[in-house]
Length: 168
Picture 1: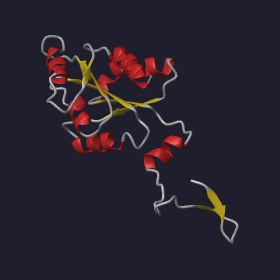
Picture 2 (picture 1 turned 135 degrees about the vertical axis):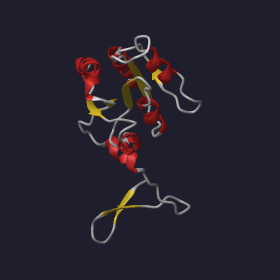
Picture 3 (picture 1 turned 90 degrees about the horizontal axis):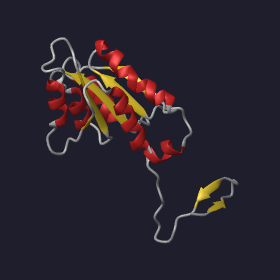
Picture 4 (picture 1 turned 90 degrees about the vertical axis):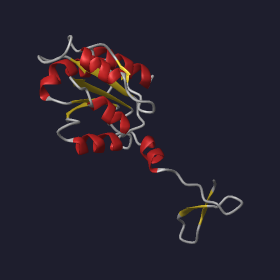
């Protein structure tokens, strides 16, 4: 599209043949901005999960990949989780790492509300079954159309490595 000057000497967009004006989406406009927004979101259901999930943040930091860490429960605050996932792409996130133990609903709930890649980290706890097998199975057995990648139990570092590979 070329520019011409109108009588007020302000650039205006010429319409291409056929009278259609090219438009860009809001996401395209944001993508063009150079901002220091995190590319990876790290979420977990409880503050007690922080020591394991911080390993993902450290790995991403070492690789120079901006990230953010949030605590939100799929069971106690499902609306917060849904809002986070729905707005993640618009905020600049490109991958979400979700750590959860026991029923491990968080990764699936996040994946249900975003089209971004979601990596689940099954976590152990004092009440885990078979050393985290309950969480591992819950994350790995997502229904069709709600994909969640799954790394090893308590292996947040591998989740960060996978996120880095997804980002390229």
